[in-house]
Length: 303
Image (cartoon, rainbow, N blue to C red):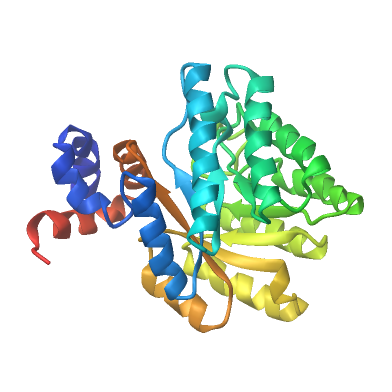
């Protein structure tokens, strides 16, 4: 009850106070902060994916600004020799305002990534966007098969079928590349599994489909149970290390992250940055009220 209460009142607290907790989960407000954190993670053996915080823009001028920012991120990754790529939210590029404009904006970013041998991960958003984002991925894969990937959400009932259908893209060259996560958006039971173990089971089912169909699997989870099961699956199938990686959020379960790295698996950390860090951290709290322990330490314990 205390955790849930703090989650509700956190948005009302001064931003400077909330930052004392948030800085563990966000690189900072500038691209320089993201590069600095990425360099530190690279030194620890982890790859990164950099994400500019924000979504659901209200005009296409913002979409153009975001495109320019992502081109700058790719340039900074190349210039600073960062072992990392970028993650994008299509709504940040105008998906819900004008699909063609969003496609053109994202295509420009993917083209830039392809030119320097880098990669763009298309994040999956709520169910209103699912069909559009899969169509976007398919269109970009046709031209840039090694420079673009997609996120799929295990809690959606459609995901196993989507994996089976999209696996056919492998026949066109390149490598189909998906990040599989549980899913965080609130969706109706008609389209999403709701049970805790039920979602876990679907996650493992989807992962197995990916491995069996020659799809590069980005295994995104902090659930130790799923990580252990995934490791067992990889071992039993003798999956080549070049066909999978584990992924985690910056600042979350670092001990588990280090354990995975110590086992010799590829690890990629999602590094968010930007002025809109406040909303991002509020969402992290709502998804996992257990983080309140970190909040209390940040507010009352001096480091």
